[in-house]
Amino acid sequence: MMQNTTTTVCQDTIEASTGTLLVGFLGTSYAMSVQAMDVEWLCRNRLEFLPVCGEPSLYSSYSVRGLPTYVLFENGKEVGRHLGRLDADALDSLLEAVFGVLKCQ
Image 1: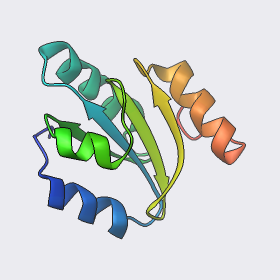
Image 2 (image 1 turned 180 degrees about the horizontal axis):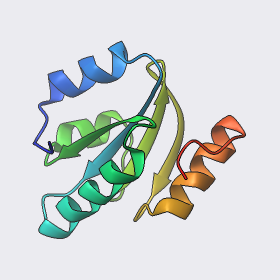
Image 3 (image 1 turned 120 degrees about the vertical axis):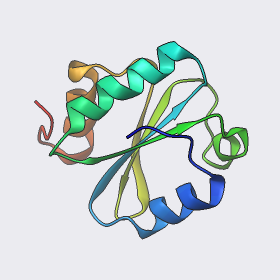
């Protein structure tokens, strides 16, 4: 389930990903943990979700300037991002903007 991800493991996971991967750059608060679980549920069986909590060096590597930030990768390449709370409508909008179709609904 959700756990802190080391910098190396996260970068390796992103670079090696095939298909669609949503990375959630989150803070360390309880509210952010709950948000991560909500997003994980939204993406279940549709796309992979990798929560990243408490890894400031990763935040700067991926130009994360505010939390939470969700970055969408396709085959290891960034294809979109969303700053702020991610609910079903925001996720649908992000996926539609990037792919032209809704993957999560």
